[in-house]
Amino acid sequence: MYKLKNIKKDGLDYIKLQNPNETTEASICLSQGARLSEFIFNNMEIVSSIRPETYKDNYASSILFPFANRIKDGKYSFEGIDYHLLCNEEDKNNALHGLVYDKPFTIINKSLTSKSASVTLLYVSEGQLIGFPFKYHFEVTYTLNPMGINLSINIKNNGESSFPFTLGWHPYFTSSHLSVSTMEFTSSKKFLQDGRNIVSGSEDSKEVMPYQIKGKKLDDAFNLQNNTIKFLTPQYHLKIECLSEANYLQLYTPSNPNIIAIEPMTGVSNSFNNKIGLQILNVNDSYKLDWIISVET
Image (cartoon, rainbow, N blue to C red):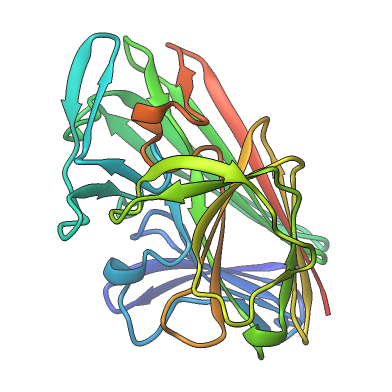
């Protein structure tokens, strides 16, 4: 039987999902936006928090909503009204990584069987957030299974007006040797960025697959022409399937060696203004998305 444990560490609340022999497990931080703080598959670390940096610095595995990446100057207009988000990327004066990454989530459902463990977590916005005064329910379900782990997002507009959104996820994946690791994805467009990491245009993607990571300092965004991203390392092969209509990919290499952020997104930076990937959630409507992560060792 799969297992679920409640853990408190450094004043934070966590849920740990484990397979029967405890060789595969997922740690989810309820106190920090329901992020996947660690994912171990067959005793191998796959998703990691970056150490010794703090979550405040690296946003490791944060779920990005209502906007992925950045909003320039924190400013946007929607249906004739101007809004101003807090700029938490102070040096570049951008609003960064959405508004749920630091919110507390509560458990509303869980299921343990001989084949999987799942937990559904909820955050409710009552329209009190600066720059985004809209009401919504945000649910995320994590399911640990023999193939890997799945994230299912369900967002419902519970307010009196529509709102704009994009959605993303910011996990850091580890590799024993990142320089000999590669990626595979299908893209026709690479997005250009200015000095503030705001999309300023695009060009035809000339990337040859498999995509070589060696020697690259990455902070690049691409469109995806299908829903599959592969990360091939010496120790494991990983596949992310993004079950949404429009998909984008952000790749980022931090200063820490042998770690890469592979970020599936439904839009790009400054989406509230450039409209790339932007969607509208109408009153009483719901939006659902699944990210399916499978691992072979």
